[in-house]
Image (cartoon, rainbow, N blue to C red; front, side):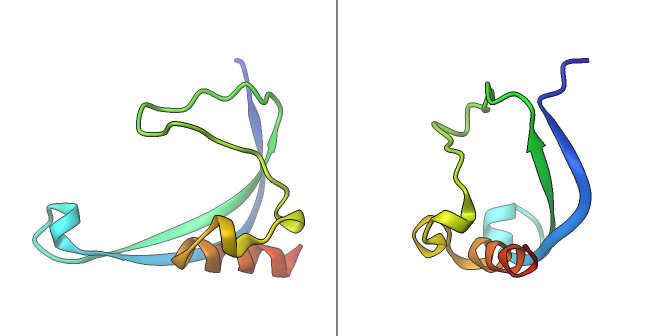
Length: 84
C-alpha cells in the first residue's frame, strides 16, 4: 500500500454548517457536522480531484488565517490553533 499521509488520531477541531435544502436537493435543510483530525503528510505529491484546481501547504501558525479561511472553516482553524 502506498501511504501518502498518516492520521494522528486526535480530534483537533469540530464545526457545523447549515446546508440549505436548495443546495442539497433535499426536502429539508441539513446540519452537517465536521470533525477535523491532524494528518502527517508523507508524500507531498498529492493528486486532487477534478472539482479543485490547486492546493497549497501552509503553516497555520505563520499566516493570517483570516485571509485564507472564512465562516465555519475559520472557526475550526482558530479552534485548532487554540490547542496547538
